[in-house]
Length: 475
Ligand code: GLU
Image (cartoon, rainbow, N blue to C red; front, side, top):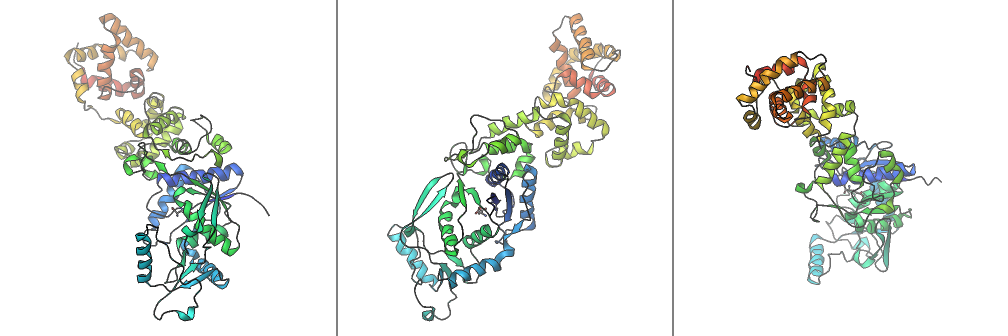
């Protein structure tokens, strides 16, 4: 039999692919790629109310954006209910499960008693060995697993190590509810078994479930898969990740202007490390990723690190590819749709020409779009307050003296343009900044922009001279 690795990502559709889920998916994907195995995708859509088509699409979209492709057909858990029920009945037939007729009042009493004794609520197993002929009339039973009551259950976890659970802490879990529907615990085990999953990599909030699920595997005589329970992501202050800390869907990160490659690189380092390597290519991640490198303590989410990493990926991205990434995100960022509306071939060319200057200054695509907005501005430019203040009469006169010189330039390129501006500064006995600042204000309407000679050049002769003409007064 082949021992090829099969991992799976098994999200419940909640309306988005949240950041913790994205990391779980990435780890499963990397482990599958690293071992030459497969990663399967199972949508745990048994909560029919929450599992709308839209919520399911958000997961597909999020995975696609991150570049995490899954193998084989997606498994929809809700289509497998009959199979889950079949296994519960097989366990019943084998004497590994039983009908439990405990009434809600009895269960409440058990909980009450446990609470009074300071123990976690546990079902006391009162129907384990009772004959169903004793069943009270009018009660629809649940099906419970006959779990061992003494001894211990060991989860050999590839992250957490050997975790031992006293069986007295694990009661007889419900497999089928009284309406016959399977529980999450049963469905997960049956699906993982049927899908041939060899490694379950998921959040450590499922660690106790692993012990309970082990009993179902053993009850069926099935191989127990390998487990790797990854510590959850915490906020920078060590507290559980909240919205404020970044517990958002990946689509929110996309809209904040992060590149998927930066996001992947950030996520892989969140709880896993390969020495001190911060920046890794996808090939390196695949080559290096392994389960023992996952840490046992919760990783802390740090927006500043993510931003810096994103800045790195922006700076190193090919200009044309960066332009494509920018254009792709315009529909979802503020001011983006207006830019998109003006994006003709000429504008595309200007943007591409401006990219070397723009990418040095932006940590996100949103910032980059903001810095590029001068290209889209319409004449006469609206000046911001600082630009307004800079353009006093003297500055406007300087521009007036500069224009005829610029009109004479041979090639409208940063080099020759710079030469002309410097020459004027020399002749006027001014520092270069004294001309460069008003020039920037007139060309961009602001006081921050890429290098001013790049701006001048990228705008093109006609547009640049026209913008200067709008602000200049005769010398
Ligand atoms: N659907 C579960 C969740 O989203 C994951 C179950 C599992 O990985 O076993 O938390």
